[in-house]
Image (tube, rainbow, N blue to C red; front, side, top):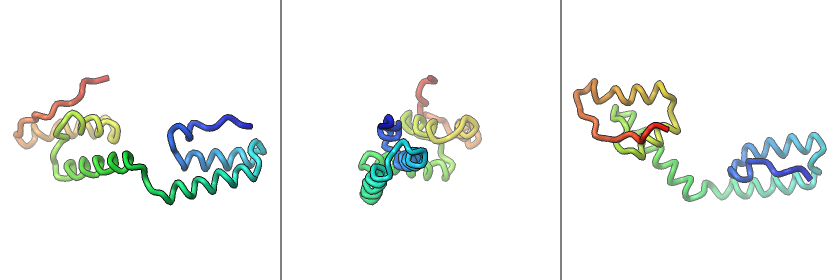
Length: 113
């Protein structure tokens, strides 16, 4: 049997699906096992996001709404989330906003890692 993919630990159904296709085509995985995996994947996908994943999505939606209104991240947690979502250029732009409007930025960014 082939070692399970990292997608299992990451709970990534898309990656698991491509892994299943690849290994079934190669012959490393029997079609019956591939069928079992794809059936379970359909059930998991139908269940919707995990509660923590949904909570994380809501935090991201909230942050994007704040940013769309020209407000930079307000807390260290929002800066950390922005750092995971956006590239360095976008983060630099968010840091400029308080200076452009004359507002004082009291939101502390997390320490650079």
